Image 1 (tube, rainbow, N blue to C red):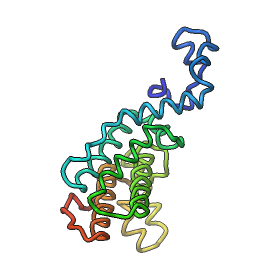
Image 2 (cartoon, helix red, strand yellow; image 1 turned 120 degrees about the vertical axis):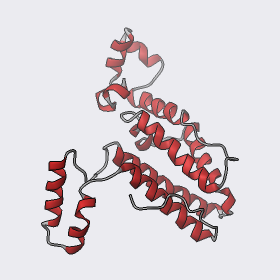
Image 3 (tube, rainbow, N blue to C red; image 1 turned 120 degrees about the horizontal axis):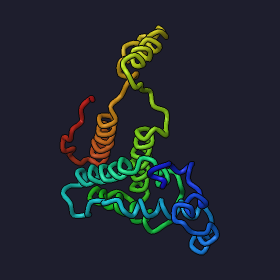
Image 4 (tube, helix red, strand yellow; image 1 turned 135 degrees about the horizontal axis):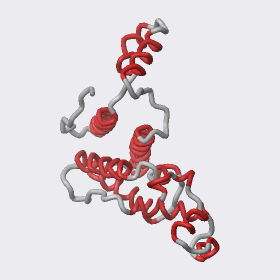
Length: 205
């Protein structure tokens, strides 16, 4: 139901109608709507097929980790924001954190820095996915006329830097932005730890 209608349209009453049961019978299983949404978020996160710890290099593992998370979001665009916005201490959340941390153990970082890397990585991935799903500010347009109007508006500021970048600010490529940002993180982390960067697809989109 949430995949179909979105979380804002969801209610326990509507769920009871969907299941053809009495509304109050749901409370034998969940305390309230928030309790159920927490369960949905946990189930969805638990379904993400994260890569194994022994798969290839740490750089390939972190790419696979990000790709798996993004793929799940793309499969459930209306439901996945629950995973990204609801705080949870569930086992699924801990398993996801451990899976990401395990991608980086080859770097030999101290636990404190390892957590900083985890949070930087998570901030980028979550922010990128929320923007892609339309839940965050995104400078873009749907058709050529809107794109040109956006270009004209940006260039009309008279600022040389904004004018030069206006054609690229006015539209965007989610794939290019996601992979470019991820490669920047990987390349920066490799440089920070003195590990050779494997030359992934780091190119302007």
